[in-house]
Length: 401
Ligand code: AMP
Ligand code: MG
Image (cartoon, rainbow, N blue to C red):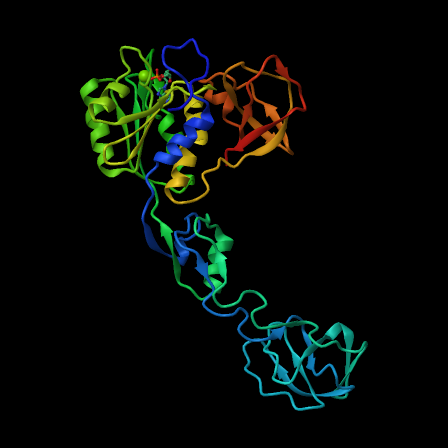
């Protein structure tokens, strides 16, 4: 059982690190599937990629220059000209070959004299300094040897890694399936953007935040829907979502008000609670559990900045764990630009703008003030304690990407 912090709340709240360990541990691990080169960036390797052959698989020149035998005294007549793509004949003793970068080193040659260090006149090449065996030659296997691990299982692939896989001659790689996510936003007050509001209504924004954050983390959205504050409707929406998703994320309705139907609905569906309430500000009423079929369920609070905390500190790590990647969160150290008050028992999570290692306060300390947080590029994590942290104090921050 997670240890409870001292709290005046009826339900214990747990440190966010403990909460993260629980969701990461409970996240279902997804099966591998073949993925083609063009789709590799953004995926996570399920199996190590090994080199099928030495790279380079032939010795070649690192420079435009002249391939020759270093032990021979020059000058050397140019016996052949080797371009990239040619498969040259052996080099006759006492001669050299003009060679382009990447050109195959002809049999017999053991060094390249770069054009900048040579003079060519009347078909004869003179080296400005005595050539050295092995100089400017890329030997067989200098990049990787056949069988070497080039990328480990669990690597999150970017464009460069995808290109490296192509460079090995492979047409794709086995990657973890993309986590399938369903998003349910709850609230009778919510209206789709673009539609007019009457008093009491607000435009729905959490689905945009949850969707974009989790898609960037490599997930596939299988359902995004708005659920009224109604017991049966909430239960039906979760039941349908659980049928097709590895992670179901709801927003709102997870507290103890008369319109908060998320927890009773999940209990009715047999979803087992991992925890409810985390020791953060905002984000405290976050609920997480596991469905009978193994899907992870997260009931995030309705306030957008509370959602942001749950997303970055719990759910992005959970979906990364589903794919076998390091769950993170990847944090950077950064200096506070202004003094920040600490809280004795809760981690303050403040959206700020990270500029040159410095966190600029946006005045976005209140959980519903989404507009103020709009320009944030990082979530500053202000550790618990008494009093203020001064400007210049270093804290962890999660880049928001
Ligand atoms: P709740 O957690 O349902 O009590 O909601 C807390 C606050 O967040 C309320 O002011 C809601 O109107 C607001 N809220 C809930 N869901 C959303 C949403 N999808 N988009 C924007 N604001 C929301
Ligand atoms: Mg609500």
